[in-house]
Amino acid sequence: MKVGIVGAGMVGSAAGFALALAGTASEIVFVDQNRALALAQAEDISHATPFHSATKVTSGGYDALEGADIVILAAGVSQKPGETRLALLERNTEVFRAVVGAVLAVVSEPILLIASNPVDIMTHVATRLSGLPRSKVIGSGTILDTARFRSLIGRHLGISPQSVHAYVLGEHGDSEVLTWSNARAGSIGLSAFAEQVGRPLTRELRQSIDHDVRNAAYRIIEGKGSTYYGIGGGLARIVKAIAQDQQAILSVSTTTDVVEGIENVTLSLPRVIGRAGVHLDLHPDLDDEEREGLRRSAEMLKDLSGKLAL
Ligand code: ADP
Image (cartoon, rainbow, N blue to C red; front, side, top):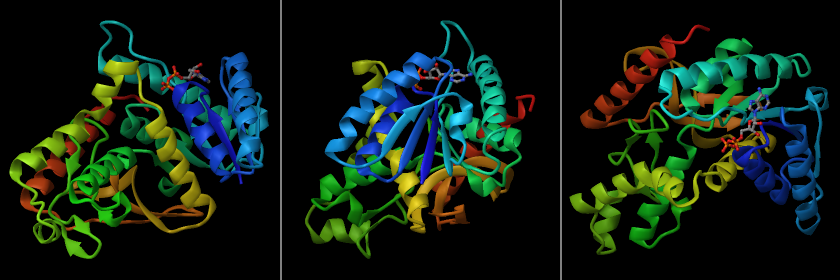
């Protein structure tokens, strides 16, 4: 499988590094308006790969994307001092207008994996601009928030995060919803499991996990300026589900017909991911508070995306 990465900055290169080490792709190509950066990232990463895999890592112009099955879009501009969120979004929409057009001129029907932030809106933008089926334009969404949620629960209960089934839905951002009501440890409801092992999930503990999941990115940005390894790992996980046609259930962002009464909104739900992209959307049972949280998140995203001229 050939994977293109447009945007060879911190996020794009972290995704490329994770993918190359895992050997999921046979070939990775970096494209960036800063060609020297794309070349340098490809060369650096290609020096690490022989220790782990046979993935070929190169860089080039858009024409080098020919034959790519998946193209990760990690290009974007960052917020200028005093710039509003909407103004930043408008600038990033223009970046995507150029990038999506250039990609589709070379690869006719790739799966687009969107990593640029705000990821739900940029996924919405990429879906509209590309005209690709919704199932083929996938935002990393809450994949990382879900991983953090599962890790923190697993750590408290003393079990592997992979044995915790719990999802973060909605926006990748402040309005996201941690769905406690349907979370399970193995096949047992979370609260019952917690009681059984003598580590109850008190209200305070849930609040502390909620706070940690919601604020993880802010904490990392405070310490090192930006976040990239986590999301790089998450993007590599999505590529693996597609490359190996795993039908894995991952929380990712795509444009969805209806979420809590709101139509054509782009946000995260658990979805079945395989070779063709999103094969199925899941609508988990939620309690009233979670449903209301998801509705609010959907409404906010719908309003914001409606403000963009697409
Ligand atoms: P992040 O931390 O989100 O990865 P960076 O600023 O490190 O942010 O990376 C963003 C990358 O996107 C930069 O390398 C930049 O050159 C690239 N980029 C921005 N606009 C375009 C564009 N129109 N075409 C291609 N690459 C772009």
